[in-house]
Image 1: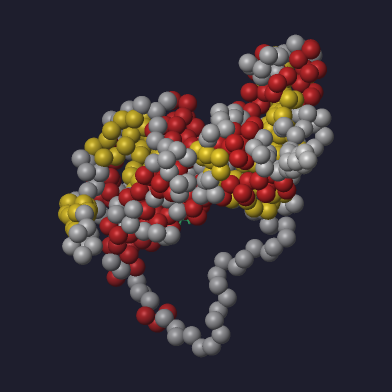
Image 2: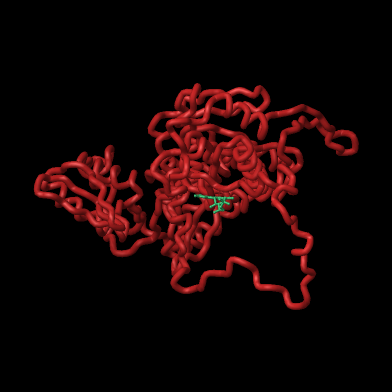
Length: 485
Ligand SMILES: Cc1cc2nc3c(=O)[nH]c(=O)nc-3n(C[C@H](O)[C@H](O)[C@H](O)COP(=O)(O)O)c2cc1C
């Protein structure tokens, strides 16, 4: 008797990748062949193209399959490839994975990094893959989103079978086995997810923390890395900052907390009566305010900057303490500095973007708090310009600060010790240091302003340091304040 044929699970048809315009983007062609992308009231020129290419570009509304234009695809179309890359660099594209008919999206890739370009990592049948511990699925509106703070893009999963297949990758799976299973989503998608670090290949390891990345990554807790990437600019495409997103639906919360019921103990009778009787420090506290515009005819000098840094951030002494693991722990080095810091870790580093300082060239520097010296960092002029632009935008002013201080954290210095609270401690330390910078600037007759945003991708480009190793967590603008008009 013939044995019955083996039952095979239903496979998902191979997925093709296509570039598609964001819903909010329109392409507008001029008579001279120049084409512009119009979105949110802006217009971005994309260059001149032939009439044929402009015609083919209309396909970008529904999605143009990569194998019809991409370099190395056999059907290379240089003009469309160029146009697609220019659109991609401006964050105006998404990429759909679906069947060739183009009717149904299975997965839509939304770039989060400005220079994201979809490319599938090479995988072979003998590879074993597993989900990153930083990857998660969540609901956004009516969509299911697969994302990770390590990924350059998020993946909108439009097919529950694909979501199921991804969930099965919580445990390491060999590709040769996966391929035989129902709902196998195809090598293309798996390769794209590996490229985005949502999945990773494991060699000898077991798929746990230590096999995913370097020591610096091991030390990050999931919620901390997510918090870092989603509360800063550079690695997410969400709008951020003072956007008042609920102003239409929720009344502004009051400036002062409503009183607790019951009888108050009045403190006003104890208030300092005359300004002369208050301490010099209390006077300084009263004087302190934010200054966003600076006197570029009379910039801060290198002498003043040196004094400012010495008084706020210089290492004052070193000491060592043994970690008491039954007398068997390592010696840990510590420093003493002017401001308090969680666990005496002093994980914060100051980087100075100098626009106008007498005696110091325009450029980007690290403040070596131990040597009390500035180390020039050869960051490019365009990146320096972008950093200043971000500060101008955040302070709503037309000129850069004379000095823009980026407060960066050496994350491992604090996460080596603290579980679950590491990132929150870093942000608290930033607040403490910013308070110190404000007070010293006031004391020296200088001006300054905290800035609530920072771009972690830009900093990574300027320093060449991976975003999870050291990165910006705060900014402070410094200079000699402009005289009141
Ligand atoms: C954490 C923090 C973030 C801030 N971010 C910004 C900012 O991005 N742009 C800005 O113009 N001011 C910023 N400020 C300054 C505040 O707007 C300012 O401190 C507040 O309006 C009170 O004014 P004062 O500092 O003059 O007393 C920030 C202040 C803090 C403490």
